[in-house]
Length: 254
Image (cartoon, rainbow, N blue to C red; front, side):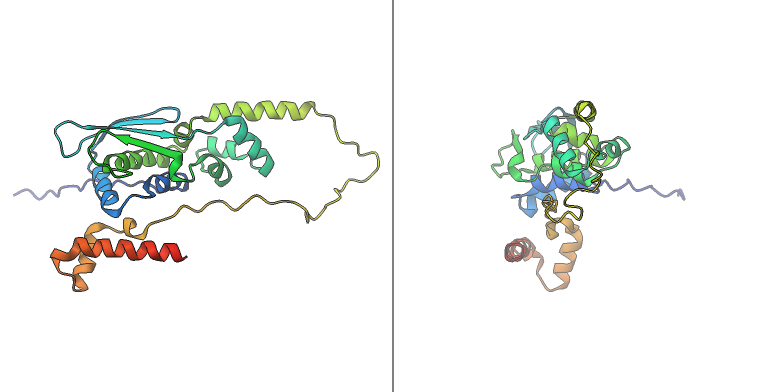
C-alpha cells in the first residue's frame, strides 16, 4: 500500500477583487440561488470552454446536461474612452490609468468603467432554460470574473475599450492643456476665491456592489446547518426557497 497522499486540486475562486465583484454582481442580479449554486459548480469543475473576450462581446461553450455543449454570448453596454478620460479629469483621477498599468484596480476608474446594472450586460444561451440568467451564462460570467481578478485590464476589454485607448485619450487631453494660456498671476492673488472649497460640487459616492448572502455560502455547509436546525432532508429545497424569500425581503426593507 503506497504511503503517498493524493494532492487535492486547488479550489477555484472568482470575484476576489472589487472590479471582478462589480461585474459578477450585475450578472447575478435577478438570478435565483439554485442557478447561481449550479453555475459555481460548473465553474469549479471547469465546464466552460473556449472563452473568447472581445470588445464588448464574450462567447463561450459550456458543457451541460446534454451531449452537445451550449453556446453562450454576453454583450455589454460599452464605454467611450474619451468620455472616461474626461470624467477622470473632472474627478482628478487621471493617475488611475498609471495605477492600472501597474496591475492595480483603482476605485475611481472602476466606478466609470464597470457595469452598474443588469441591463449593462445582455446574455443569450442555446439551452432550453428560459431563466433570465441560466447556469451556463452565470458560469461564463464567473470565468470572466476570474480573468479580471488575474488581469484587471480584462474589464476594459469586456466593456469595449482598452488601456492603450485610454492612455491615448489622456495624452491628447494633456497636450491640449499644455497649449492653453497660463493664468494671469500679475495681480498677486495666488489663492482661488473659494480656497476652502465650500462651493465645490463633489462627485456621487461610488456604487457598492450588492452581495447576496445565500450565494456566498457553501451549499454543503448550508445544508448541514439546515439539517442541524431540524429541517428534514426532504424539505431542504423548500427551506432554501424560504431563506431566499426572507433575505430578499430584508434587502428590500433596507
